[in-house]
Length: 148
Image 1 (spheres, rainbow, N blue to C red):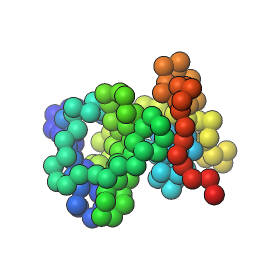
Image 2: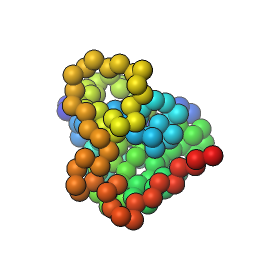
Image 3: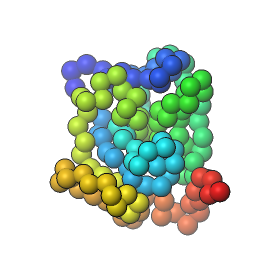
Image 4: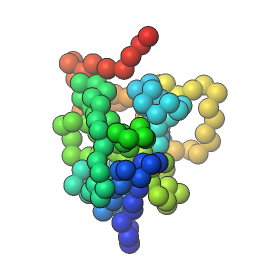
């Protein structure tokens, strides 16, 4: 990556900079669907140390016992997803100033992928919890998304 990627919320109150090239995924899990209001979340992952808030900062919601989601406290734009005990964070790809500069590498949470969504990109697809070390496999994991 030759230059830092920048991004922020729709009202401009929160801005950030990424100092490393992110790994971009589409997450189809129910929690990401609820958090973004879309059928999947487009996320770009970097190490937490490679993300700098350059204006303002997000508010956070603990969407489960293992993760938090950052959003603009002024306009509500979804900005981040991070497992609390890992060194990586994901910014919403759509909040990047140049989202087309980040290539997609995989699909995640495909057990909740909408059956009518046809993405013929040939990229790898993974189910939530496929990896034994996934935080969602922890016996104490609990979602905090509303159900009613």
